[in-house]
Length: 294
Length: 294
Image 1: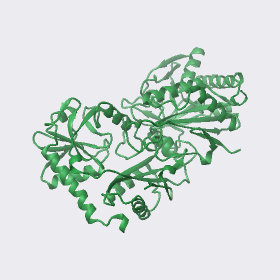
Image 2: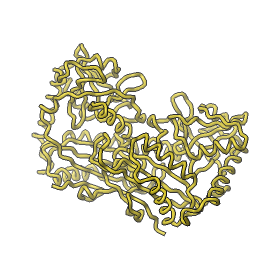
Image 3: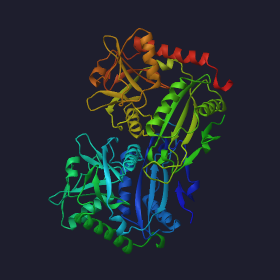
Image 4: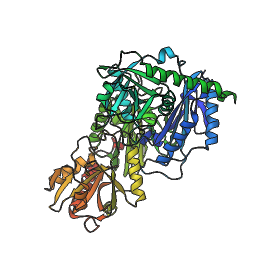
């Protein structure tokens, strides 16, 4: 099946999906995005993603491209036209629009709205529970990573460094040697005392949707949860470590730089959280009307 | 005359110039650019711009899209097809290319190469010498602004703040209250002792081509030049202040935030530097073969 993209009002074959070269997303990174998981045709935690999209747009004073009601219809239509995948992701990007190149905000232009859908292999527990290595690298990003902007060049470079080091993700480190987050995920540790620790969602990190759900699930499971910054040294002494993301779910970490975490397998609390998160996704997929059938 | 753009091997009408929505320039700010002034059909200081482009590409490990020889031919052809303007600018952008969205570098793809030309009103001394106001704002950019990447969102926000404050440019300030540079220009002051001061081109600023030429001209004029960081307080006590950029040339500053600089008119040293820079541009335009006639 050929994939269908959405570009400014039109559903088009993805290979033909284009924006103007003076789109401010292309020339200035002047745009925001969201990535939402699809499970059995259902957009998981869609309301939280749309709420954050609204917030990001507001922070950058980019107009909402279409009404929220229209946006939901387009989202559903995109899932449907792409075969309502058993598992996948929907990518939404909004930029300030196209205008002759000039740093300041142009007036009288419409924002650009782009969407794509990608099908992924089903999220099998056997695969999800496999642990991966992370490296630590200085956080080179701009001072507002809490806005989900497409200003992702430092994230790209960090992720590439991770790949080349044989790791899966890079955890970014601030000037006080504390971990902020991963290049495309939020970082978590579980201390020797069993405390579940993740950095508070201030301006130094993106407040991940999976992060928020996992915080809720952890509290519901009766775990001791602390939202506080933690150092690289503290992370390397942790009993367990993991990261959260829209398609990574709850991903166990076996190694931080050269330090092994636990016995290299998923730890008991991480396992509990992964299972709870999987159940959250499956329940939402089972109890919602798949967008394709509304 | 309709404007002609260049996109990956083709000269196209600018209104039809497009890139794919999965171009990494659009989704990740994973690209670099140059802006080169055109005077009487001549690309001013083109070699310096191409040298910096090569350096930016190398820093991000983006392949050179076409040979340097071919690039020069395309540049000349772009100037010619756009009427070899008496004054204008040529914009070049290179991104890592188009690939399914994934942070790490994709393999086996070709970089994207895009160019546009814009005609501008001739650079009249009477207009250039008019001084403008600047504001100061925290430098929110990533840690590698020395790379001329399209990761420009904080620059956009700074410039917009300047406009809304009735100023022309925002000078960005580091954590030690020292000015780094403007959102699209390099910052300079002239002390009460007549010292010409601009921040050294370390990793905290973009090493502007106009900055480099003006440094050379200032030394040739026998001025005392210091490449050193200066504070906001020092700038506000300066006798003269100005900024340099590809199309701004040498732009006098009348006011920094609420502090007037000098008597509000262009100062004598700034005037000397502006005239020297104008002469540099005009001499290069007169002594080079315009690209349109080669």
